Length: 196
Image 1 (cartoon, rainbow, N blue to C red):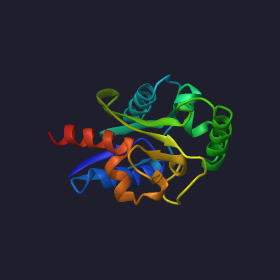
Image 2 (image 1 turned 180 degrees about the horizontal axis):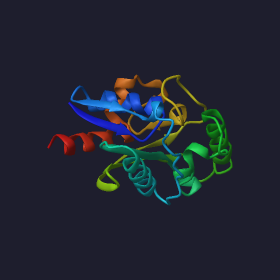
Image 3 (image 1 turned 90 degrees about the vertical axis):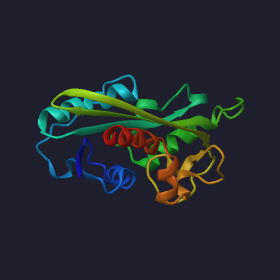
Image 4 (image 1 turned 45 degrees about the vertical axis):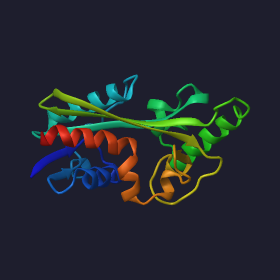
């Protein structure tokens, strides 16, 4: 069984990784590692932030480390919230506050064609002992709905409707979401590389 340490304390992400990677992998995160230093996300892209986190954590722990950075890009907002997705409404903003800010800003652009076109993007960095071993990316296109729908998922899931579906990410079961999400696509690429 292959062991991976995720550079996160987000239980939702850890659960997604474990479900998508499958039984061949033992996935741990930083929940029980209070000694790990907090990582600043100062990169200009998702890949840069993932690399910063993977390198920092892989220098602190003797393990194969995976770090991710992901977020929502909205056409009408020139790609925002982008790398600021988790803190769009402020450093300690809740998911609901981030969603409310995005919907309010998007309402001001409503007359623009394609104002609600958006995509979720994820970048994963794989590292050991401070060295990057690979970068894996996933993207899913979609639109932003007018009102949050669904109770599954987290973050912007209640307002993101993937292309070709009539339900938001938050209205999909974890199994359905894990087949098509941006993170799932990146994790599947990572899995293929690790099992090759």
